[in-house]
Image (tube, rainbow, N blue to C red; front, side, top):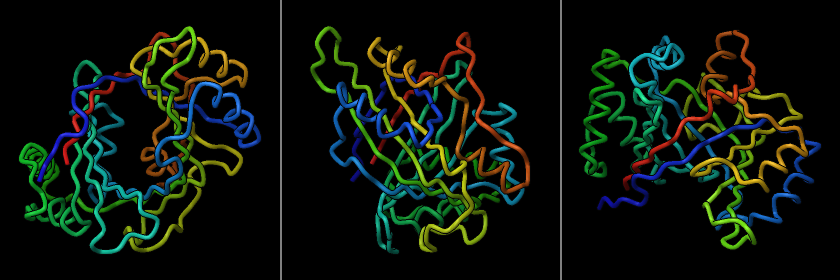
Length: 265
């Protein structure tokens, strides 16, 4: 049965590259205003679907179409064939507003949909199926698992009551031990891969419905953290092709894109 768990909300997502030496103190400062999520630690394995020549990510980098990214994701450390996993399609419209569609099925049902266009009985989201078939047609029915990306995540959420500040549902995630591989692209082949970042850095991402509150800006300033333009999949693609890729500061005048998520299960 399909149900909508999150609909039509906007948030700004910003990324920061943090030195590992600062993480412990940074979390200590953040915990004056945030608490650990209901499931604070998770292992996240992703498979990105693309063509053999990576046409999807190249189109996204060139800002063609809706800059789609298509991935299969699991939070299960050692998934099995019958484990539920997520299929997510992320895109951006002409105004830079991001959209995310999500459903749950087994990995084989998702692979069958992506590579062969076969709709398993588990997949009951006609809107997402239509989007997938549109993408398959655009790329000549050549979408397949092309990149595996793994990382460990710590998830934090804003305290519901902070004196002097309204509740904004701010979320903070810290990702570390990031690896990727473009061979043996499977959820069942372990966590091995090449490092996505230098060992002494992690990625912190902040999700907020608007501009960051002063308490958060003060913490970011204390650690000299600057908004960065960084994509895990783009980084993995560049490195797999022997190309240079590095996070780069985001110009304040540009700002971060709002994200409108429509999530269906």
